[in-house]
Amino acid sequence: MPDRTLLTRWAADTWRSFEAMTDPETGLPTDSIAASLDPATRSGYTSPTNIGGLLWCTVAARDLGLADADEARDRLARLLTTLAGMEVHDESGMFFNWYDDRSGALLRQMPDSGHEIQQFLSSVDNGWLAAGLMVAAAAEPRVAAQAHVVLDRMDFGVFHDAAAGPDGPGGRLTGGFWVEDPGVDTRRASFVPGHADVFHTKHHYDLLDSEPRIASYVGIAYGQIPPEHYAALDAPLRHYRGRDVVPTFGGSMFEALMPTIFVPEARWAPDTWGVNEARTVALQREYALDEQGYGYWGFSPSACPGEGYSVFGVPPIAWEADGYPSERDGEVVVTPHASAMALMVELGAATDNLVRIERDLGAYGPGGFIDAVDTRTGRHAGRHLSLDQSMVLGSLANVLVDDCLRRWFATPEVEAVLRPVVAAREMPLS
Image (cartoon, rainbow, N blue to C red; front, side, top):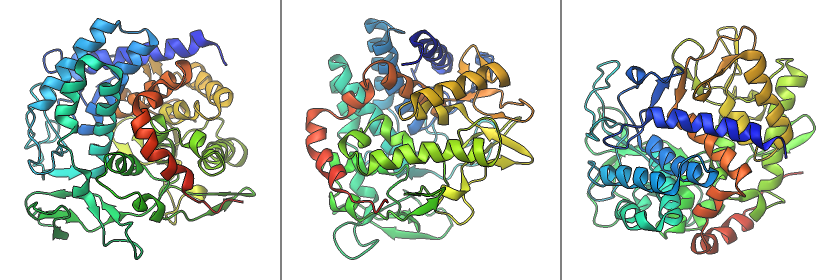
């Protein structure tokens, strides 16, 4: 174990960013804030993923000793009270993409751009919210009833297209749906008997090693999606540097490892998930250090140095033909949250990488690691994203407190359902 004092300092500073991002009245997190943590730089909007992240990070902060039990419980209760009153899709209990973090009201226009919002409900975003609710309900009995008010009305069957994919009962999840016709190409359908038709995306999530599997896990755990769905997802191979790996769509760490903050895939399936997670991290590291000579590693979608947001990855381990790039406009962009998740897989190497990102590149501030940095110039993003900070703190909590978030999510009841499904899943690795 590397120096616990160092890892705990990173966790404490990351929690400080959440304290700055949280509205004191609603308890909701803002989507982003400047690295200075100036409250005037709060974005003014939030998402289901951001809210789920704050739920699990509040539990993580308590378990790490960064927030006392009463403070954590009060924060959870305030957030859950707001969440229970927010506008949702009535039939499924699913949340829309964007809300005002200062009131909990559904946003009609984006505060920063003024662009009109097409009200979309994402399968992935709602999966992360549900994960946070499951963690909060298990970790804090005094708010469990509040968490279940929201969680128990969420039906992930609304996203499950049983007719998609290969023949059989597996099916696929759609990207999500609009309640009203958005004026783009959609599929009008209802996948839950008795529900009104909605306007689903035409695309489905096909890959096993992908971020949407958190929604699959939640839906299977609650009996809303059949276990055969997980078995039927695609697990193609990429061969790189002498090893097979099951790729993600873009070759990013976020797609591969974020679900493992909650589901101990490598422990439940050491010969499949355990091997694949280790290879994914090793190949990200080798690509950056040995092949490209970048000096630093860890690629995942993030804020861009300067401004904007983009996707970053390792193309040779991506399923998409070109994958997500590791460079953008002449900059090599690494993001600390990718290495933070790698702490759960390659603790020593990931710690060393983060030490050098802080020390040599200066991508650190009062709220912890800044979202992304160019390894060639040290130019950084200048802000924290709530989503990415939730990956940092969640991963640190698992490393420092005996897989605490995995234990809160994978309760004995959840494990009894999910573990056989995960363990039985084959991957043709060699």
